[in-house]
Length: 188
View 1: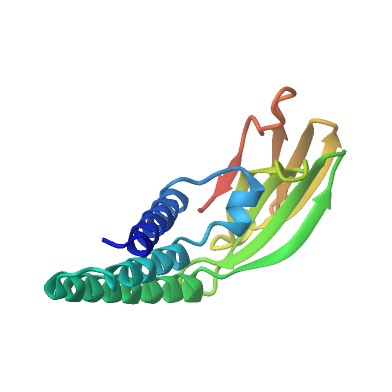
View 2: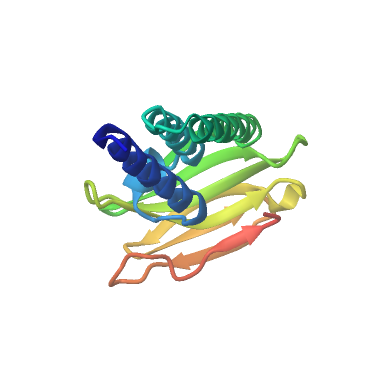
């Protein structure tokens, strides 16, 4: 096997491994969560690299088998990725600034195929490339009283999430890690 094929095979395995990692493991590092969380694109890349690596093989039958499997894998990854993008779009609503270095991120998405919307809240601790983000709440407006209304910082390590009917969900932060100690979920 030529060195080019070996290098492409290694790159294909790395891309496939990274695709598997980001698909099955949800990281709290913002760098990984927002910029490398593309499992279907990485899976397609892994299949294309495998096909390129197969071009250097001596045996024609093995080359054809790898081309077919890589093409099938890339097609499945592209189809699954396009379906995921179609049905799982998330709209950025904004941020609620808190005491430095914290912010609460608000995101709205559709709940399935119906008219219901889901509001997701996450806590972000800014720290450059090592910024972290944790989920703190999810509210489905399927039941109108359970819909998200507001979030308010109550101190340097605590905030409250309020829903339409007036219920309040207090969230406190771990002073050592900044991770939320509690979360709130209604209908998600």
